[in-house]
Length: 93
Image 1 (cartoon, helix red, strand yellow):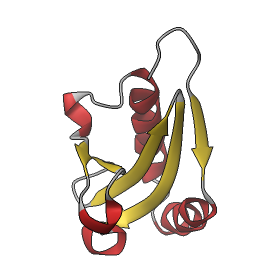
Image 2 (cartoon, helix red, strand yellow; image 1 turned 180 degrees about the vertical axis):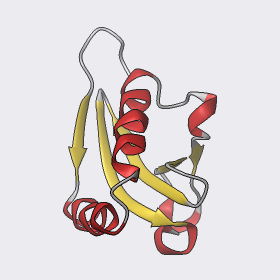
Image 3 (cartoon, helix red, strand yellow; image 1 turned 45 degrees about the vertical axis):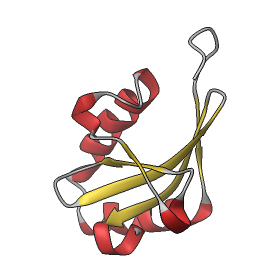
């Protein structure tokens, strides 16, 4: 990611649908989600996010921790972070 241009977050339809369900089920997670987005914008590879590259059918994607049991799957292109999927390990892999 280039540091000289602003970072854009793009939320894919699948992500938005799952995020809405997750927030309705657990409203307390909304602030955690906002904090994680701020960290992603600042540094998607911050050690606190536990970002790791995925393999196999998910090659080219990354995952980071939202909570102990929830993951965010995303891709990077230039200064755009594409939020692709959200859920527990079994849901997103």
